[in-house]
Figure 1 (cartoon, helix red, strand yellow):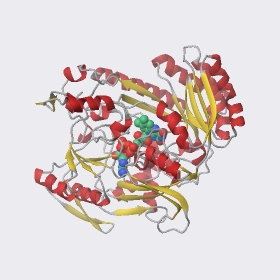
Figure 2: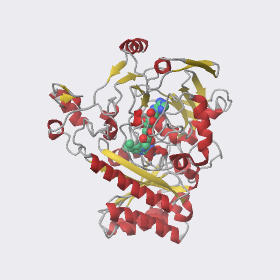
Figure 3: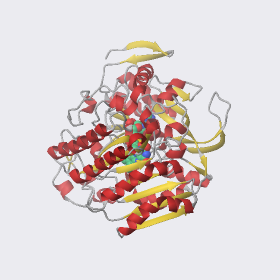
Figure 4: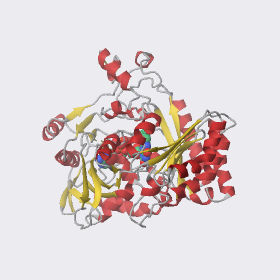
Amino acid sequence: MFFLGIVIHGFLLRRVAASATPTDEQWAQLNQTVGGRLYTSLPLAASCFSTVNGLPSTPNATECSLVQQGYTQPDFRFAHYSAHMMPQWETCQSTVQRCLLNSNDPSDPAAWEDNECWQGAIAPYYIDVRSEDDVLEAISFINETGVQFSIKASGHDYKGRSSFGSLSLWMRNLDSLSYSANFTPEGGNATYPAITVGAGTPFEDVYSFAEENNITVIGGYHQTIAASGGWVQAGGHSILSPIYGLGVDRVLQYKIVTLDGVSRTVNEFQDPDLFWALRGGAASTFGVVLESSMLVEPQMSLRVASISFNQTADNARGFLELLVNNSYKWGQEGWGGHMGPATLINVNPLLTLEEAQASVQPVVDYALAQNGTAVVEDLPSWQTFFAKYVESAEASVGVQTILGSRLIPTDPFFTDDDGKEALVDLMVKMVDTYAVNPYIIQGTPFLYNYTEGTTSVTPAWRSSLWQIGFHENMAYNATLDTMYAQYEIVNNITSWMRELAPNSGAYFNEANPYEPDHEVAFWGDNYPALLELKNKYDPFKLLDCWMCVGWQGPADERYSCYLNISSNY
Ligand SMILES: Cc1cc2nc3c(=O)[nH]c(=O)nc-3n(C[C@H](O)[C@H](O)[C@H](O)COP(=O)(O)OP(=O)(O)OC[C@H]3O[C@@H](n4cnc5c(N)ncnc54)[C@H](O)[C@@H]3O)c2cc1C
């Protein structure tokens, strides 16, 4: 192995041969330095199979039964290193090597009787990170060995960026939480009410903690997303973002270990360039984040509108027209929410209950005319809303799901009759052509008073009212041909979206995994500066991920499990 030493930021970095394989002795040494918390991994459902990684294995009925019970439960997946919310990222899609259960019926024995179990894309070694020292040791090991590594918090990533390489840093157990009414970013004087959240703390814990402290945290729409992980670093939308901004707007400080092995407290006073990069340049790019501190709001009551009815070929268009026609006014009134051709769950902290009822009356009337249900009510806090509405309605996990999306500019799609009609036509075309429902998120920072240049997300966030996304599910035993066909549907729909709004962008975390021109789509004009910072803070490209800033491209061996979907990366 050859070493080349150079001095950057005053620290000696060593460049080693790419993708080196550490020796058993080196792994053993690493295990010692991280207190015995280096583990080898097997797929989540390995205990069900009689052949694992090509070798005979004795199934363990007790363990297999536990996996079956927890298979589609986010908390169960969150608690297991090998599990990802979208299980295709546990698999090697290109070779169709996997170890999955039937997500429609996890007790279906065909899954393990008809198949072998393969490691897939899951890193064979992982460190259960418990401290900053663990991360420093890991970075030192990575610098010395050149081993390819990834970082996993919750496994929510829609593009498999938390599962690949030989070594993974599993952040889930860095789960601290604290609140200060007078938080001062290091180097500054001003104080803010803020929470500080460890890298692995899930939103469900954050929200309970906020409730106990009579505060509101602006966060995501799923209980096990890691608040300080991929969510905040790439943007982080919430249905309260229309008023209070994106996650990146609210972060005050990060603690991070960069790839030169330096632990930094980063904010607008210290390493402000890196702080800017971490406010939208996305995770797994500039270093390993240990915690983030975020501005909070006082506890607030919410007006909630919840509407649903049975969708038919005849009633979807009318409802979508109502959504498009009302969303600009709703945006001005402070509504945010999730909507579809026959559903709506929106919240508003600004209107009175009476005002809220009047505001959504057209969609209530429409739903009731379809024999649907409509509730408009007052709830005392975000936590009560989340427990009542989100946990029961959120996107399912444990199912192979592909996502695609685009940010939809306010002008002309909500301001001009032709624009509105084109937007409705697009959504109806999705339903009619592929039976794919648009998943509409009114979660852009529409009313938020943004200070220009403070974040690095695509500027498209600031001029958009909606994100339209959609889900395409794949069966657990989908063949290679079927997978390609399903990705093609995703590519077709996202290309329609790009044609509709060519100058807009897409949310890094929720875009088509094979989005063309991803630099422009995810970061717009911010990309060149982000790339410069990537080169500054990770000159040897130790950290790399699919379509991240400075990405080494699909040919790199760590991406061998992705499909070969030809498009213009
Ligand atoms: C069901 C579901 C619901 C969602 N709802 C929302 C929503 O309401 N709003 C929204 O904005 N997004 C939402 N998302 C998208 C979500 O924000 C992203 O998937 C996000 O990347 C998850 O981050 P994570 O750290 O929890 O996941 P992981 O898969 O563990 O990690 C995601 C990325 O972050 C990196 N990473 C994780 N921890 C660290 C760290 N400590 N330091 C450096 N890099 C790190 C990983 O390497 C990976 O690249 C949702 C996703 C799902 C699956």
